[in-house]
Length: 210
Image (cartoon, rainbow, N blue to C red):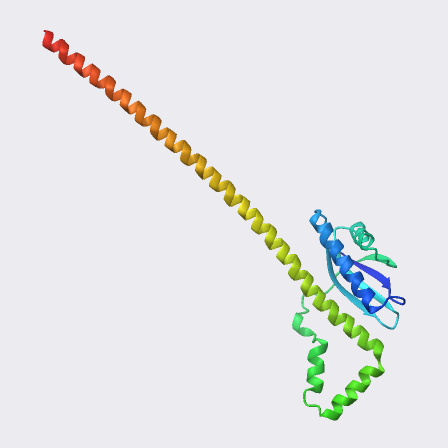
């Protein structure tokens, strides 16, 4: 699948509406996947300074991404295809998450440092909203992936049940055929025995007559 970035304007979008839009697009992606179309809602990022959001999708084409947003009723500025040029030598452990950096910086801090950090957070609400959106999106992505895996496992389980039922039916048919063959063989053996007995008896009668 190719990668696509959807750029959206958040200047007039509240955090609540932003969450609803994300859920709507995610639900639309699941619906399209159930129809056999290849699309995946990968992640979202916000640019607070510009009031914009960048959503990352994997899809078979830009048309499917447009269809997902149209179904969810979510407006966007543009949809562009991008290339993942991350070098193979870059490992996951190369970068550190924001939380790990916060723990490293504030693990040995005093209560006064905590108050200073709280003051900085409230003094910069735009940054806090971006962090909140990022954390919420990460959790939502985990939940969405869990739901997708659950649906996939349920589908595979249903397929396995159907296969087991088919094999059981086939086994019953084979068992019935086997019983019929055994019965036919026994009948044939009985007829052969009667014929042989008749031939032997006739032979003995002919010898006695001589």
